[in-house]
Length: 361
Image (cartoon, rainbow, N blue to C red; front, side, top):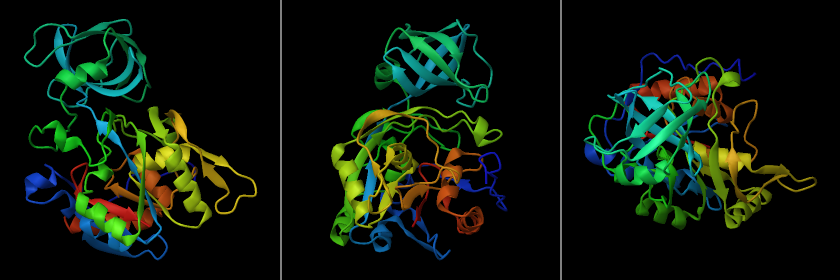
């Protein structure tokens, strides 16, 4: 199956429901969201709560988590005298960024900027200009993303006056803390690496008691709202920066050599690990190793570029027409995933960053 031939519509009988608020605002603890466990070998599905996660892992499994912290990446701006929002996606350099254009009500805005034009960033309630931005180029013709240059570091500006990026299915404004995971250490993600959100101290204690090891890396996520419009071959792939510490690379390589499972917490971790693979001739295990270091990646994991390192995945429930769904197809058969998601929809599972979670093993 080629990337262009992937059917990124699961053809569910009805649209899934989105989580309108974090679980804490719905009377649940973070680790009480539902957990859909998919066994890709047997095709079986089980339904549990996230605090049951240790029951589905084994002693010696290596769990890899993302330590990126979410910035408040939604900035108020003015363009040609009209208000709008900018969603920060990626900082390419201290003065160069990729941003997404959004309407004053926060909805997607497909209207183009004109390269060479200037925008200004303004604080809540208007007032003085916080930064001036020059539009350089459209990032990709099939996206709402633009490369811009600014006279201030927009990520620093966002830390002072930005709002968290949240979408229309969230029913009220949320504090920045709602968008952080227990692992968050290094600011840089435009959107939360949300697979880590249900983890709590009690889950980590139970994992340790089970003999599951935990290591970390950092990948700063961009915005996820530029859907796959036609096929993956023409999809705008946002560059994302990642860092794999030597200790994490060593732990992953040792797990592969010893035949132990590597479980990624989130598609971000999958992308980082699979971007850092190099072949090792004559090596036991999978014949590859993960290299430590920091760099940028545009690598997509799909059925035509399957994972070479990661054996299992903890992740949220993914929408149609997304590269995340293509990644899921690299771990599960599309028909198996469709059946599992269909059951989850009928059982009331909730989608998106504050919703329920799946485990693929």
